Image 1 (cartoon, each protein chain N blue to C red):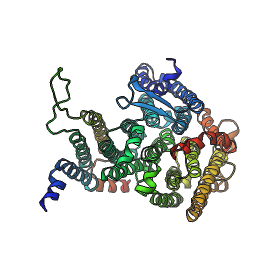
Image 2: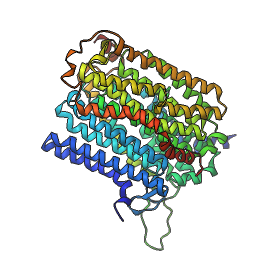
Image 3: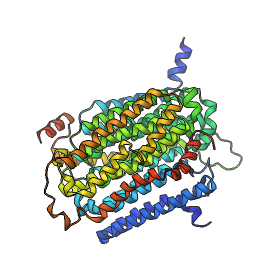
Image 4: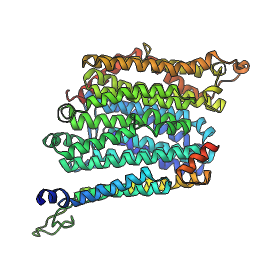
Length: 125
Length: 497
C-alpha cells in the first residue's frame, strides 16, 4: 500500500513541486485582476519550468560536470538541461521587462492597472 | 567552403547584424534605416530562393553550426517543406518592408522609426530561424525572439488600446512558450536528444510512455496558441486590429504560419504519422476542431464592424483550413494545406495592405465610414476584390487551388461531411468579403472628382499590394510549378521520399 504511493509522490517529489508551482503561477495568470500580479504569476510559472529542467539533469551522487584529471573516477550530472535553462531564464527576464514596460504605459494612459477598472475605463472612452 | 554552402546560416545572421547596423546608422541619421532594412530583406529573399532551388536539385541541406555535428552541435536542416515556407515568409517580409516606409512615417512617428526597423529585423530573424532550424530547443529560442519582437511591435502603434492588446498577447504567448518548453523537456527526458531527426529515430521506442504523451500535448497546445488555432485565438483579433498596418501585415501573414509550420514539423517529422494515428489518435479530434474553427472564425468575421478586425477573424477561420489538412493527414490534403500556407499569406497580406491604405488615406477602418470608398481608391478596392475572390476560393485563384486539394484529400479519406462543411466555410467567406465590396462599390456617393490628378496612395505602398493581388491570380494559374515543390514536401511529412 505504502510502496506505490511512495513511488508516486515521494520518489519524484521534485516533479510534484514543479507541477504545484506551475499551477500556482497559472492560477495567478488567469484569476488575478492586477496586471503586475499577473506578471508575477507568469514568473512563478516560468520558474516552475526552470526547476523541472534543472532537476531533470540531476544524477544522484553526481558531481559538477567539470573535467577532472586522468585517473579520477567521477559521476557527472547532466549539464545539458542546465545550459538550456540558462537560455530560457534570459527569455523569461526579457519577457518580464517588456511586460513591465507595457504596464507602465498602460498606467500612464489609463491611470489604473486593474483589469476590472480597465474595462470600465475603456467603456467610458 | 564557398559562400553558397554557408547560405543557410547567413539567412539568420545577416538580419541580426543588420538590426545592429540599423541601430547605429539610425543614431547617425534616421533616413539610413529604411534602405538597410530593405536591402537586407531582399538579399535574404534572394538567398532563400537559391537555397530552395538547391534543395530541389540536390536534396535536403544539413548545415552544422560551427562545424559541430549533431548530437553535439545544432544543425540547420532545410528540405522541400521548410524551404518552401522560408521563401513564403521572406516574400511577404520583402513586400511588407517595401510597404512599411510610408506606413511607418504615418502611424508610428519619426522618433520611433529606428526601433521599428530594428525590431522588424529581429522579428524576421526569429521567424526565419524557426523555419530552418533542425533542433527542437533552438526552435523554442527563435520562437521567443520573434515573440518578444512582436509584442513590442504591436505596442508601437501609439494607441492606448495597442498596449493592452500587446500585454494580453504577451501573457498568452508566454504561457504558450512555457508549455512548449515543458513539452520539449519531456521529449528530452524520454529520448535524450534535441535534434529533430535524432529524436524521430529514438522516439518510437518510448511511444507508450506517459512522458511522451504529456510532451506531445504540451507542444501541440503551445504551438496552437501561437498559431491562433480556435479556441486558443483570443489574443489574435486585438493584436491584429490594434497594431500598426505594417506590423499587422507581417504578423498576420507570417507569424501564425510559422507556428503552424512548427506544429506540422513536430507532429509529422518527430512524432510521425504512426504516433498520431495508431498510438495516440488525435487526427479525428484536430479535424473536428479545425472545422469548428473554419465556421466560427467566418461567423465572427461577419459580425465585425471594423475592417481590420473582420480580417483578423477571417485569419482564425483560415488557420482552420491548414489544420484541416493536419487532421486529414493524407498526401493530397497536406498538399492543399501547405499550398494554403503560401496562398493565405499572399491573400491576407494583400487584404491587410488594403486596410492599411484605407487607414492611411481615410484615417479609419470602421466599415460604416467606408461607404463608396471605391470611387476614391479604385486600385485598392480592385486589389481587395481580387484577393477576396481568392479568399472565397473562386477559380482560378490560389485560394481555389488549395481548397480544391483539401476537399479532394478529405474525400479520399472518406470524410464526406467534413468536406461539405469546408465548402460551407467558403460560402461564409463570401459573407464577409462581399460585405466590404458592397459598402465600397454600391453604397454612398463619395466625390471622387479630383482623383485623376494624384495617385490614391504613395507608389511604395500601392506596388506591393498590386503585386500580391496579382500573385493570388497567377500562383493559381501556374499552380503546377508550385506542386513540384509542395508534392514532395507533403510526401516528406508523411514519411515517404
